[in-house]
Image (cartoon, rainbow, N blue to C red; front, top):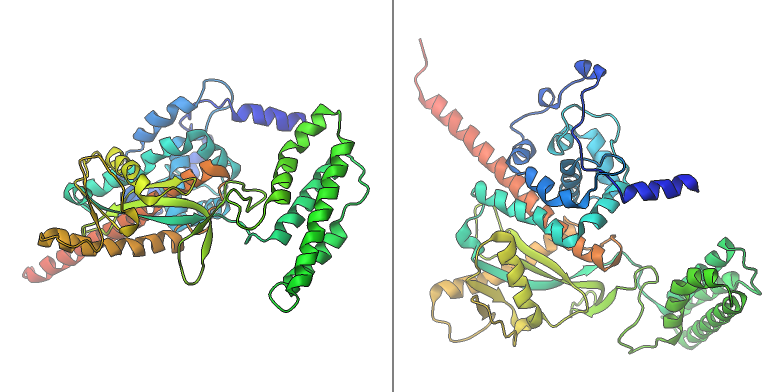
Length: 458
């Protein structure tokens, strides 16, 4: 108990990152530059990123008390690699130990056989920095794209904007599932604090939930709904029993406050309500209807995405991405999305191409907004770029299949905002690695062609 409290105190008072000192045994250790191919695209990319930019921006989140903090390049590099590969925190930590290129990308000098951090350090680092400051990672990927000529300033002046759903890693919400989760949460808290209940309802609740799953989609729909009403009755009885047991105890009432508040929401909500609870552990989850044939509703948060409209040499880069809690109307989010693009790129947006869901946007900025299927446009350039608006759909698909936009595991509304920014940075890194590999291949091919054309020396 004392050790856990002491660790929690140290987490909030970490010193600025310090450079690692050489140890006596490092004379016999293999340096990474002697192990890896220095022409590898990931090695080239590591040399093009301005890592000191992160040290200057994130230094304010450290104090001069407590244990030394982890290097900023290590933490930023791990998050970039995680979303570039579409891995979880645990998986990227395992890959980092095995992959010398990952270690070099994160600033290591010697090959490490053991993980130099705890996996939970990534969670605490994300929460400490926040979504606003993590936008710097996305901005740096765009700066590298400009330096490598993978994208031009001209391309960033013309963007395509659309919205999608960043789904949360929750089970499909059903009444029986939510009611049973409430019973389980209340019983777990009661057992932890030695509260003796009249009846737990766990055994009969699990049986009722199984019967609902078996009967709800067949001829036994009415019987299934009777079991749902029984579950609601049992959860209400359990909640009232706990309320009587903890009455007058301020400490226990504070412990049960959040769980009982969510149980109360589950007990009163009905079909058709607007502010419903869809996940017991993630109350921020929203139900969003996108009109898809395969899934009528998606559960998560609406997310806005902006990509370059033109066909650039390195591909279509994401120049802005942000979570939109509250499921606002698409047209009301356009101004904020254009402002984020201009903030990250430093380039004023001249043209923005959107679909018909943005009608009535009332954007008051300097950017000209063009809506799909609009008649009367005579400029062939604008008509061609308007046809390119559909190219944003494959980019959204890549962020979900190759990235981590499909099932967000980060907790809370802040986790939604952080995940959206990092997904965009990971997509840009994938494009940059492919672009650098293409440049390297073209350089080698040109060198071989020149060498073959030269006469042989006698």
